[in-house]
Image (cartoon, rainbow, N blue to C red; front, side, top):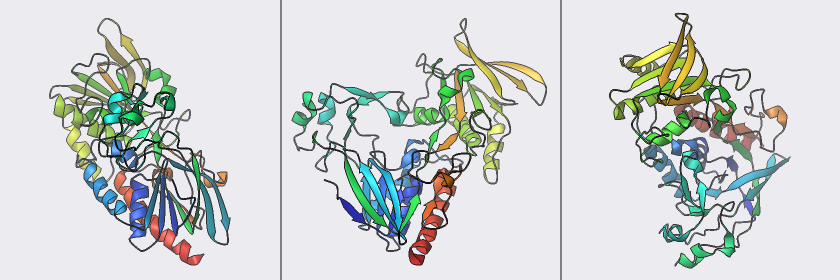
Length: 418
């Protein structure tokens, strides 16, 4: 049972890397923090990354440190599967209503996995972007926190099945749980709601959804990850075989007045990183990168220079106009024009990776629309509502962490002022 009312100094909405950082930094100054997350786990998109650029280290170490700081700090109250439904302001305080979806699994869960063995239903695995399936009762990923199972009520048959209930020796499954509403009173709000990749299904010229060998950059992260759908082996989706050629399509939907007009800032570096994933597994693979311009500012320029020295990585300045299938070879054909040479290109590839942009998660928030700019990003209101992370503008993880820390200082000022 969730508490019906929570009194806090600060509410942090979203428990990705921005929200976790803000929550622990605020709590360690002595503030009482309520942290809510709409997913059944915390960590956000960073948990789905294989490695950071430019050092190519896994994100797990940094996340584990912050999650340990969070779970051992009694000043942080965490609610998962929770979303803000209403916000009102009175005398410098915020009254926030939060809807909490049932998890159907209690704190008695030991993650033993016996429930999964008997579950007859399955669901598309959103953590792996639909590239595999899990049972309807599942743990989102191996090191998820909270480390307990959750039930997908859109695929579970509920009490008409009841097999997981019978299999759980700890009595940790409660199929009678209902949605609850929690009232949170707070002095300031940090909105750290994160982002989603642009919907590649809207990019019909690239054949995403039609050709299985056309994937997105976030799907590539999961293919390369040891806990991904292929256990880290990058395979051609149509054949599950090895790969000899890969094409990267930059600005897939970004810098385009018909889709996202802005640059998502990190896509170039993400694709450069992905060439290293490919090279590690396939030393002889040929790679083509189709770009408008490569944006690798500051310290990232060295990483770009390193990739560009690879004799099997070929850069073509120009947008891809079309991706089609050559039925005789089974390979994909990318049509483009190299604007540096004026040459029309038709390049074959066994795998095409679309560098889709970052969209802020703000459209469903119960906020005044004047706080959302023309590109859909959140604007701080100048008082106690503070925007933080990728919902203010696309940025890399290090910049997000810096902004999250700064947002706590703004929150403290707002609390003291009000």
